Image 1 (cartoon, rainbow over the protein chains, first blue to last red):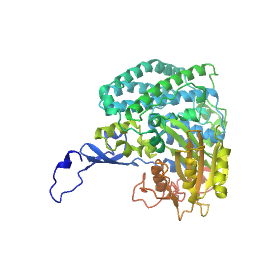
Image 2: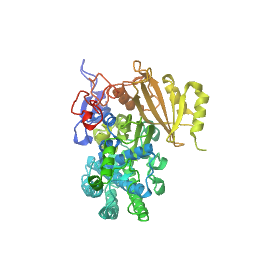
Image 3: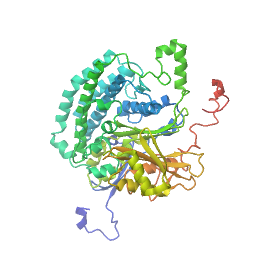
Image 4: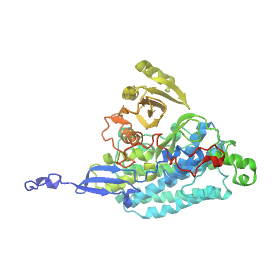
Length: 405
Length: 173
């Protein structure tokens, strides 16, 4: 509306002086496959209409036909930037349903893996915010440390991105000494990198101008929109599932919850950075704690649900039978209904599970944090510039796999 | 004083009397059933009362029970109070032929897409929803795929005959 107001339009011309702009579905800045139909008045956004569903894979429906172990690969493909968290979260849900208690060492190993996953997720998100504001250096710099974490996963379970790392009761195999060495290496090297990464952005004039006050949301509005995780904490609410409803022995660790004040893109960036420091501290504590625990323990003693060792499966009849029974879903699953939340890298990831005692869940619903954030997007970018829309989108940490499920 | 499930239950019974049924506590979370006409009233009550303050809607979804005649669809709400850190779940049941349930969008902005998703997959018609259209599936679809009458795989496939695996001759899984 600005300058055009005093321009005398000829008789009969259209009054609406806005253009429609399609951002996405496959645009490099949309971080996956989702579309935004933006109504633009010059460079300013009048309204935004987000559309999702382009990679919907019907995981909830597929899960209704699969035994519990075969659902693990589905959860890996939700938020693929931090697959182990989804994965372990799913197994925690099943363990809660079956009433399985895991040994302390398993809990701590899981905490190490989940925090590593959180770090990789945050560092990707934060470095991509940099890319979207034109700073490619940080992205290239931290990428090699994500690579290092992927090597740790590889050492533990054999795969890198969609890890399939968990089992009901623990891990598939024990952590090798090399895995611990790599974790130590990461702990030794990463703080310096993170510090440098932080100083690259947080005092950068361009970055501050581009992010402060962009996509801001108040605490009240964020709660009403169902925000969780770093996006809610940036608005000043110190809600963290790890503290509110501890799982996996998180209560044994000392860490603080970083909170922001304004809930804008800059604060979201800062909260994620601060969380990475906390995660590093948690991993360090966990590494100390497991030194005092028996080394051979890496799963709970539940032969009816825990997949036997592969070497045994190939050589022992009993193990083969158990393996077959578990994989085909012939073991008893208790009926029950539960909602188990875990703190995913980008917010509260909830598993709502109804079991009727059959081999597959009667109903499984994923409470996916991305899905919740994205509906606030039109409100966040209303009145902003087009370039703000891009950076606001990347700061919400949307992962298309989780958005669509 | 921390908020107990007992206290929430007493407050609810005090307010709504016998309308709320099936109170149970599974895995530490209280759950109950409410009549579908009362869903907004229950939520508003839980939202407003100073000692409850359930102001966070964690999750909203539906479940299809084809065998329950007259209440085939259950809409499930998970509420959370940050102040007391207590969660609860309640369900409203509706007939599949008249799946009208009041929308919670005026209370919780987050319900908007969750209800669209529930409509998309189960066909629950949220009365008063500002934009009740499909969200993950294509617009042209004329059925609700998460209902139990739509099995995942083609039931006529013969390569999955369970007889081969010693489980009787049922075709399909």
